[in-house]
Length: 551
Image (tube, rainbow, N blue to C red):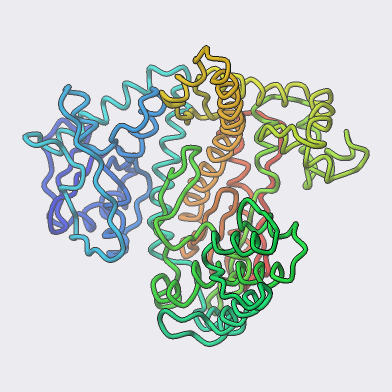
C-alpha cells in the first residue's frame, strides 16, 4: 500500500492512500496513526522529507519500514536530467510541474535552534497550493520521469536505497553512538594537559609553542598562524610555499619536530576537544546529524560533529553498553571490487576472489609486490601518472584491459564536458560555464590551461563512476541490513555508517545473528546492484567492546 503523508502543525497530518479513491484522511496523531497502519499492512510511506518527519516519530517510538522521500528523489532526478542546483523541496518540485516560480530550499536547522513539533512551512507547496495535492502531483511526476529513463529499475532502486538511508540516518542520530565521556576526557588530559580556561592553550600545546619559539632564536611565533611560520623559516633562510605538514617534514630544522607535534595535538583539541564533548555527547551517546547524499558521489556528510572524521585516537571512547557488543564491519577494498563488477573484466573478477585483493593482484601481475599493485590500482581509479604510477598502470592495462578501459572512458567523457553515471544512475555534475569557456578558448596560452582543466575534470569523472557506484552498493547494503535486522534482531541498532563501514550496537546474545545479517546483506546488495557478477564483496563483522579494537 502506498500512502502519502504530509505533516502539519502540532503532530497532526493529512494523508492519502494512493490505491484508494477515497477522500484525504485527517490525522490528529501522526505517530500513532502511522504506527498502527504499518503494523497491519505493508506500507510504503511517501513523505516530503524523512529527515524532518522521523525525529518526532522516533521520540514516540515509531520506526518507519519503507518510504519514498520526495526531496531526495527530486535531487537524484534533477541531477540525472542534468539540472543540478535546482531546489528539490516539495514546493519547488510542484512549481516545476506547473511552470511556477520555484521556492528555494529551506535553510537547514542548526543545533541551537528549537524546531516546532512539525514545520509545515519548511519547503512545502507554493502559496495557494494544497500541500497534500502537491505531494500527490510530485510523486506522480517523479514516477513518470523515472519510467522514461533507460534503466528505470536501477533508478528506482537508487531512490529506494536513498530513502531508506534517510530513515537509517535519523535512527542513528536518535540512538547515538555509545560514547564514554570519561575515557575521552582522560585521553584529552593525558595528551593535552588539564582543561584550560577559555582563550588559553592547553599546557602541552603551550609548552610546544614555547619550544617552537625557542627554535626560532626565542622570537615569539604563533603556531596557529601558518603565514607566521612561513615568515619565521624565511628569516632563517629557508623558503617554503606553505606550513603544511608534508612541507615541514622535508626540512632539517629544530622547529620541525615541535611544529609537527603541535599541529597534531592542536587538530585534536580544536576538532574533538572538551568543547566538542560538551556539544555532541549527551547521556553516553554521540548523536551526529547525518546528511544523506551530502556529497555528489552519494556519500554521506555530517552537519557538525565531524562524525565521518573521527581520529583513531578517540575510537577508544566508543564502548558498547554492558551486556551489549559493537559489530564492526567494513568492506575490504570496496572501490577496486566495484570497478571489477562495473567493467565485467573476468580476469579481474578472479583476482577479487581473495579477501585481500591487493595481495592477489600483486601475485597475478606485479611479482608479489603488494605496494606496487596498490599504486597501479589507485592510479587507474584516480588518474595518477607521475613517478612509477605510469609504468605500473601500463602493466595493469595490459593484464586487465576491460577494467582500465572502463575508467578511461569515463575520463574521456569528463574531458569532453559530458556527465557520467554510477551503476544505479547517480549523475556527476556538469562542468561550469567558466570551464567550458576555458576549454574552448583558441588562444594558445588559454589552450594550455584549458587542456589542464579538461584533464582535471577527467580525473574527477574517472573516479566518480567508481566512487558513486561504491556508494550505490554501500547504501543498498545499509538499506538491506536495516530491513533484515527489523525482523531477526529488532533490538539491534545501526549506530554508525561511513562509506564502506557500518557499526551495529546489539545485545551480545544476538551477535551471531547480526554478523550473519551483515554478511548476507552484502551479498544481497551485490546481487541487487550488479546482478550476476562473479566479483566478491566480503563484509565480515567483528564483535568488540571497544571500537578501537576492531582495527
